[in-house]
Length: 318
Image (cartoon, rainbow, N blue to C red; front, side, top):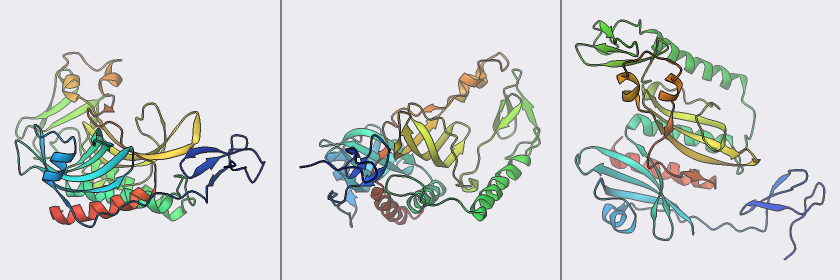
């Protein structure tokens, strides 16, 4: 079978991903019209928790699956949305977005969604990505002045929330807070609330329902380059976002990745020394253990994820 030629310069095209070709000379990207994509089987019924425990690598030592949906399955990977609970706390339910290595459905990656506000943010973020980007994860249209203004107003709401903290009064019970000897945190002697300080400035848990869900390009991504993304959760020790990324050597090939970062603030605040040059390293974000590889290469999968998450939302009554 003859290979596709670039319609612009006539150079032989190279495959970026199945169905997408790129010209190595002029970098033009086109969709292969002869490519027939495998139809994704859309689940209409939830699979039982027993099925997930038996047919996937979910470890019963730590968590129990109750029910879930496989929203996409290929020869290499399957993506599932699973309602789970901790083995120690049956009432502690969450959504486990899982990537499984095929054909044995071994663990490949995951993100846990632990609240209705977080789920709502994820649905909003996925819908924005689905509406605003094409099949190659390139922006369909430029942002309007109204959209930019709205993002600024939303971010202003967060700044107003942060400004309410005066550096002395507990944000929870409004009692007087005490600064630690190493000047790294404030502690409330009444309710136990802790506010971590970085160079004297407070680091807050931003309420999940107050996040602006606007686009940003500032993320602690390793190995790849972040193009644009949306934060769905940001607290002092945990950060979750969905980000469109690319490899530095091939900026035209983009895909979506679910990121889950954490940082150990206990080590930072327990140090007897004051903040110094090591502060940045101590407060650095790192990939959460077990988060693994959480990529979405086919944009159509996003639609299935949105449908599946809405069904899971109903099941949890979130």
